[in-house]
Amino acid sequence: MKISQAMIVKNEEKNIEKALSWGKGIVAEQIVVDTGSTDRTVEIAKKMGAKVVFFPWQDDFALAKNFAISQCQYPWIALLDADEYFEEQDAQKLPEILKKVDKESRVGGILTAWLHLNKKGTVGEGGSIIRLFRNRKDIRYRRAIHEQLEYENGDPFFVFDCTDNLSIFHTGYIDLKNAEKMRSDRNLRLIEKELSKNPEDFEMMVYLGNEYLLRNQFREAKQQYEKFLSYIPENYSLYHSLIASGMVNHLHVLEKLETEERKDYFTEALQVVREATKLLPEDGDFAFTLGKYLYGKEKYQEAIPYLQEALQKIERYGAANQSQSLLGGLVYCYKILAFACLKEKDLKGAVRYSMVVLQGNPNEWESLRTLLYALWEGETKPEEIVGLLSRFYGRDYSLLQAVAQEIGYESLLQYLAQYNE
Image 1 (cartoon, rainbow, N blue to C red):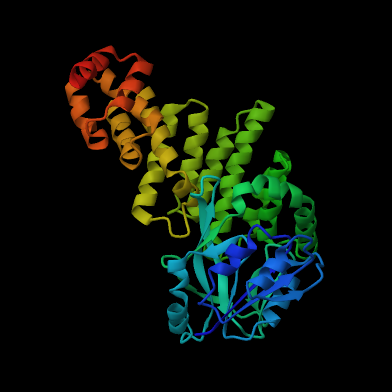
Image 2 (image 1 turned 60 degrees about the vertical axis):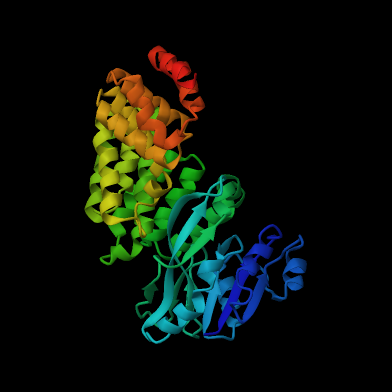
């Protein structure tokens, strides 16, 4: 099954090589539509064998992407951004997957996982996205920003769910705040333009709220997040990721307003969680966000059940296209839950959740400290502690000794000194 790879770019010299590399040997053609680069983007793309076409930027992402589509000649199109890529093992799957999906005539595109990498190069957030679709004259993008694919006659755009098999990695979130600040005037203008054409577009309301949040205009953001709920369509499950992000950001805004205005917004936050849970009952992000909110206020007793609920949901329902904030902050959730349990004298909980973190990373200092405090308060014998932690450290107890020294755990230090002799 032949694939056309296409992208629109402007000043992407840092990303263009990687953006084109994943498709080598997989796609039949690579088309780069340049909208006005002043760096080496065009030079690098040509050197890598891509066909470069120029298109003047007209403040409309859909217009530029639709032009890119018009340049493609093969049955399927992979239209990723320059800061997105498939890893090699997933790229190798594409021809076989497309061969299978091609038989499903009603399917217009393929839904993949969309994983945003943080500064550490690990997944910070995620969701799903359509970047693979059929090359048909009646499939085009709509909206000048946050554009979406659709059939031009208005028929439902059916997708094949490959979120469990294919993942697109997005590096743009690494410097998201700075990048978004530079683009915020443009984005705000385009979103307002779209809303002027369709004032009931709930998606644009969420995006407008996000723009206000980015600008620290929390009151304006709150108004947008409150408003969009009234315009959610009946088939809202198709917009799971967007609705979830809007509700989570609403909670963040309330937290910011509480600090800024010195006013208690917990009642409103709780109502947001109830509404979000009613809409998306299997998503753990709302309980997680409220749990973090309460934890930050040192309301540990109230935070614990929400953090536990979040973990129960991701364990029971998974994280395919849901619980994405929780997925990115899973270790943090266990860490703060362990500490909250410690503060509320639930020593077994503190031990259990700390051990989960240490299983993944034995060098996690804060979790080891929480664990040692819990074992100390539980009057666990030093030899039992060493036996418990031998699975992580073998016979090297230097980290354990350092943490015990920090918290003043003298009996454990004395035992370790004898043990090392």
